[in-house]
Length: 162
Length: 162
DNA sequence: CCCTAATTGTTAGTGCACTAATAATTAGCG
DNA sequence: CGCTAATTATTAGTGCACTAACAATTAGGG
Image (cartoon, rainbow over all chains, first blue to last red; front, top):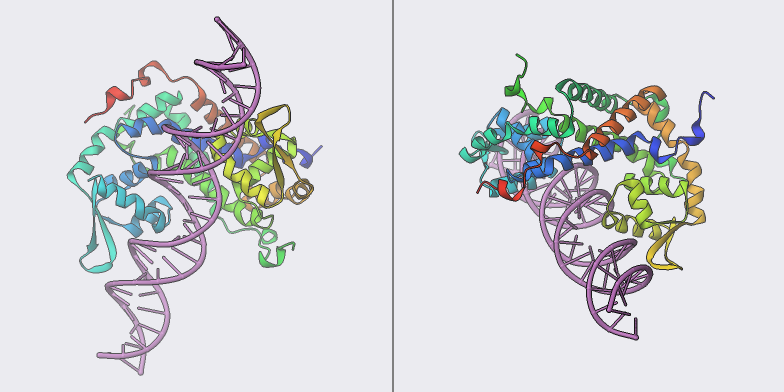
């Protein structure tokens, strides 16, 4: 009775299933709120990064959001088309892209200040509950970043079953 | 000092950010493991549903996975192309789609039994920690399914600012 | 039997997120 | 200066996930 591994494949027991559903569900809660600001959820995260500091390079934003530059490029293009930011080359380093908030982009922050409270109320969660969940997610993210234990580090190529 | 709302827009404090990163990160851990079985993560979840019961209708799988049928249709098409399941119309109800495991699909379950343990070990999480995280996610999902409080139920159309 | 409505799937189109390939710039070295 | 390597962005291609539109079937009511 110590390892009921036979039931480990039950869908309702999978953390990955609960996690992906929770992620989609929470983003779905944001959707109507962000729509009023003309933003998708990934675009909102980019704006959060820029409200903290502007200008920033794409590489810098990529590191902050843990997203590939290839994922962010089209998002930034749409935000530029929406008039919320500009994309120019950094004068001293023509490889880097200087992403800078426009006045419209900076002004949008005022509307955004209401978002976290709206979401907390919609979810019926206290600030403390949100902090606990955030800490749990941060710990889980850290677990994925830790180096793999030796037994799990099998060569992928040799494991192809044919 | 009870409501430090000024910092509520800090990226590092956003539950939605931590949640989406955690989801992507954990799915990323599954990726090399599932690749050896020829599955993507969404395909793996479909297989989990079918290993519990086969045949099932698309509608039934859609309800179990909390996914739109339109999302599952191409996933099922690829799993059929991979020879893991068949798609036929239900004899008594030609609207419904009978999704049935092939022998190859059913046999794949044996390889899959090793997956949960591999992931737990890779993440360095005990069965109890996984259960706690699962419970937290389940609670969060339930929060998104609760009816919205009155104040958040503003008409979307009237809120368009421009 | 028709007409209408509900149920069930599929397809089209938008937007992420990833990898791989490409391009452009910069830096280091002779 | 020219060659090579590293850095940084972009583009192409695959696969999800969603909404909207469409098609097919079934069920219910004259």
